[in-house]
Amino acid sequence: MANVDVDNIYDYIVVGGGTAGLVVASRLSEDDQTRVLVIEAGADHQHDPLVETPGLLAALLGNEEYDWNFASVPQETLRNRRVHLSRGKGLGGSSAINFMASVFPSRGSIDSWGELGNTGWSFDSMAPYYQKFFTRHEPGKKVQEIARIDNLDASLSGHGPVQLSFGDEDAYGVSHSSWMDACASLGFKNSNDPMSGSVNGALQVLASIDPASKTRSHAATAFYGENVRRRSNLTVLTETSVQKIEFQGQDSEVVAVGVILKLKDGSLKTIRAGREVVLAAGAVHSPQVLEVSGIGGRRLLEQNGIRVIIDNPGVGENLQDHAMVCQSYEVQDNIASTDKFRDPNLVEAAINQYQKDRGGPLGSSTNSGAFLPMVDGKGRMSVDARKDLLEAHVHDSSPRNLLLKEKFVAGEPLFSLLWFHGQINVPDKSSSFGDYISSSQPQNFLTILNSPGHPLSRGTCHIQSPDINVPPVVDPKYMSHPADLEVMARSVMFGETLMSTEPLRSKVLMPGGARMPEFVPDDIEKAKEVIRTRLISNMHLSGTCAMLPRDQGGVVDENLLVHGTRNLRVIDASIFPLIPIGNIQSTVYAVAEKGADLIKQAQP
Image: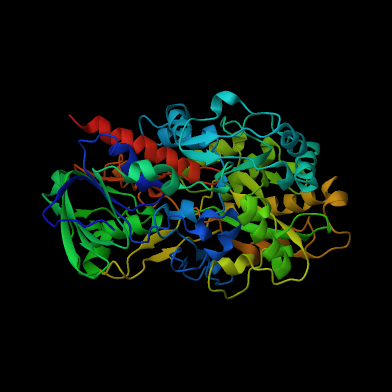
């Protein structure tokens, strides 16, 4: 950890060295005349084999060295279960502990941001920023054949530091081809590049894995590699927490003048910001930092004895997440499944192979998936059926939900499905997300992760103490909007239909094999019960510092400046006004790239 002189003033202070924060810091420090400080509460996991090795991610989840391991309040809609919410702790943030799935959003997902009043935000305006953060490595011909990859557009392959790949030939098998063929037979063959914004069907999911080294490619390796670490104008403090942001001024003239830090040795330091403070602490910590610093709802702040700097009750509201319902199916013996690694001999062999030549299952992550419109047990729902269902269950008049309703009727992808090559267990009580992926059942499984891409339910994330070290209260309110439960139940029914479709039924499923859960695919009430007992988080928390007009609950404007301040920005997933469909990692990177440009453009 670098030493910081208490009298130093940095041009930019970036709070959070995660997926977004390191992008912003790296881009700003490209100018060697600009001095940048990054503050990260977690450690520097450079060269840590648990982070670097793709197949060891289960060891990260719930491990306090890498994972904040939040849990929701009991969810009334889920039989009062608490849901575990893993969040990355350390340089790289959640990009260093997630499942490495690199999924890109639909055009409609991002266009909706601009349609809500955010000038300059659209799929077309964001496209260059998606292209800027990654480089896609094209699959070999054999992989293309097995995985049915025939729709890639080379012009979309990017030119950035995060490495994306499909994996080697030996990582693919009959489960991948059968998924694609079954989806196609149900009318969901996708003919467009998954990065095009026009996906409506099956796809093979890219992984953020460097194909040369077979290691995880995340924000710290991509944006804080050796060349960046040597920059004399960039200082990164790890195991250091921000206690609060300090302000001067009032009304619309509030200026962030610095931050109070707690260093690893327990001492407090005040660091001044010459230009801006950038809050990039994520959807849980960013609203927490704002509230303990005096920006939030007046009533909440005064209850906690915090002086109100800006009264904005939108802080910590609008919490969104991609919940996922886990449907696990026993598979035939020849199908790859992580459940086989309950055998310690197989684990030892895999580790030895990876250490020898980076080969074998520990160096890859290959998943099939799909973007789907509104479906039910029979397949694609008609326009009239979609409209009738939404008219019956969407009665609120918020601009966000009315916009989503319009897009759903028009056929916007509403669900994402993703293979997980193993079983998912959802006990009534558990200690971390890692418990969900433990192989407690003796059979070998594959699991469909069935996730609503645009939930209408909204949760909250608020402080319960003025002490930043006391975790905030996170309440996602999963399935609290009646439409979410109705459309999700129909998607669960479709999952059963898909798995009963050839060639999945005969080539992948074990005849008469176990299923978790067991239910009749045309019984919607039982499908709802599956949701209540098998829903967990996809770890895509977002929206708690929404980019919206202030009178609509917004916290930041279209330039990502906190309403009422002159130089405090939020740049992370918390600014999403609406969560985009699919895994949000790619959109966090793109928002950070755009945010860095907005900062540069604001300078004289």
